[in-house]
Length: 126
Image (cartoon, rainbow, N blue to C red; front, side):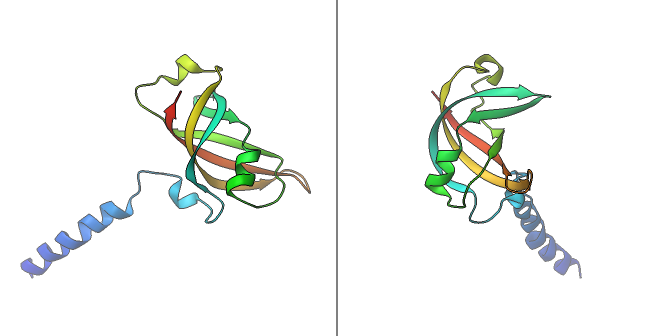
C-alpha cells in the first residue's frame, strides 16, 4: 500500500502542476479566434484603475490573422511584458510592440456591434 501511494504521488503531483497554467487567460481563449503569431503593432499603453491596456488599431490585425466579419471595437489588456521596462514610464507614448494576442471574450454591444476582448503578451517594445 505504501509503495502504491508513493507511485501515485510520483505520477499525480507532476500532472497537477502541469494542469495548472500560469496563463489565467489560456483556458478562456476561443479556439480559432486568437492570433497565434507574434505581430508588430504601433500604439501606446495606458492604465485604467490599476490595469494596463494596449491602445492600437487591432482591426487590420484581426482581418490579417483571424477572419470573422466586422468588429466595432476591441479591448486589449496587457497580460505580460518585458520586466526590464516600466510601463508607467512609456504610458501614452507611441511605440512599436511585438505582441501575441489571445481573444478571451466577445460581447454584443447592441444588435449589430460586437466588442472583442483580448489579452496581449508583449515580447518586445521598441
